[in-house]
Length: 440
Image (cartoon, rainbow, N blue to C red; front, side, top):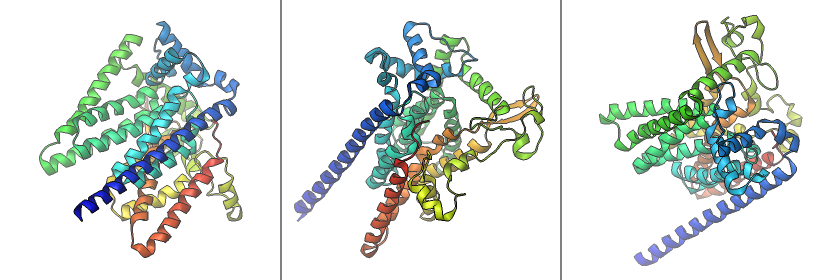
């Protein structure tokens, strides 16, 4: 009997492994076909030549030619972990639309894999499958998969950071701890907005270390390697910056100056004025401008992106959801009740994702790009709709973990209903994503 049970368990495990592999490979094939189609049909040549996209191959080519430099007044030149991988693709495959988009495509496909293992580590295999599926179809991620902009690699690295953090804690692994710290510091080297995740990660790690020190009178050895990884990656960045600009902290100074000035002066093309004056009515100075020169603007950019249908007439709501041209579609309508469900069920493994989602949205709305003591100013980070990708990883994982937990709860009588409702929610999310506007 014992041998029979053992064979039965092994058979189920093998079946489960092959099911997961087939689903992941199907999603990878879908991703490759999707990127090829979008490049050929929805990537106008004029956009490639006039947007930021055209700058990154130029900088990559300069790096290969030995003429690359980082400049304080050229913010794109500091995004070294977008430029260097692109340079490698160009070196290996030559210059083409596919080689210059290759780093983003690889990041997109890699994220599908990573999100499966992250969902599985947080809860179970089903959560991993849901996470991979929702990642592949998430409109904002899909819209960045075939471009040359650094947002896709940044969100991929953020998922890798989360996975390495979970593995470091669960497996008590020094190697994963070292990688976790290195990935965290690498995020703003891809694009400066990644610094938001660095801030959130550092806050979480400090709180985690303080809790462990209080409870166990010390921090676990493997988690110290997270700090070592951060120091190592930081030293590498300082050396690289010094070699190519003469300023070891140019990534910090250039980004702070640029985004602080953008926050002060812009009020068009989806970017709003972001200062204490126009959000709270507190008059503070902003560079050489007086408060009256930059007052005004909206603070609803992220709310509009997350819940773009909330103001629609009820009788037209379903039609808009099914035939939407929005970039984020309906994910956040499901994420909010999923978050409440996780708190209700006390699913502690997902608490870090909950912190990331809530604190991330708060920082995007009220966090600073630059703080000045003289003249006194608290300059908010500019509000741009695509920065919502900062919380894409926790949004997808919260939905996935909640659905997997809901599916596995209850008795046999409830299982059919729970399965039906789960499938209905997943289909609803996918259908409302398929017609989204995937060109940014």
